[in-house]
Length: 334
Image 1 (cartoon, rainbow, N blue to C red):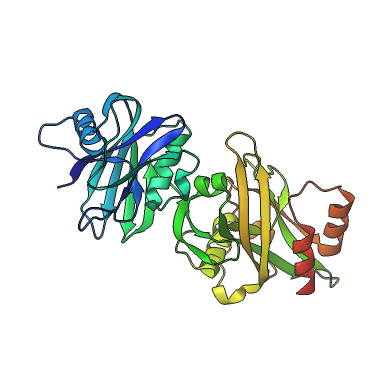
Image 2 (image 1 turned 135 degrees about the vertical axis):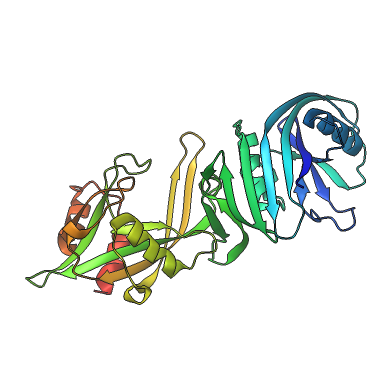
């Protein structure tokens, strides 16, 4: 039977009260920072459980609790549970020591630097940005987050990397990665052909008009993020099939290098892109009429001779989101 529990974040002066779990034997949360809370007793409502756990673990009396959603925790190692998530915005009393760990007030913009469960970063972003959800489902294999859905919608998960390309050792949601400007990996796949006159042409896609970034701009043949746990080459094969409807064998793709791509947009919550981008070539005489375009991503496709493309980019006569550095990398391998 799934355990029913509460998890509470107490807010004061732009800080959350965080608990470093380091005093309890056989603790699944050992060494991690979480909120306060615990298992509901028989007959307790979530609010009653939350108030009791807050009092027992902190000495504080919660006077205003805001329900923020239910988090379903599934694991191949630990007991499954429903965590009733609360934000406490008013309380009385003085903070006391906790026998389960150390209590610290942490600035909200600093909590993400702590050692957290991967899934906690997802729901903490909701709390920090003032958003709510009804149901979040987190599935773990060991300590690694394998899947997440929020209100029935699957959340994209990426492996996080350091700037030097080494693994950071955790996964994060797509919106969290771009919110925090974390390094991650992407694929750019360029389809190349030689026309009847011997000229080299690149297949360009026009991005869908509904895209948040660069709507209706000419772009790479196919591109996309590498999902958490996904092999980069298999990810490239997947992107070509999803966006263009073209089936490709992995051995057909030629990896010609990796480029660093960065982009910042501080509107709204902010969008910060930090990519280690793998560049692939596919040399194929593709018939445009045989493609099946992913309408949510791709508006249309066209062939363009590489020198004409470079000239138009430099002249500013083309609506595009391409990088001259990438075109020059292609040129060196054609």
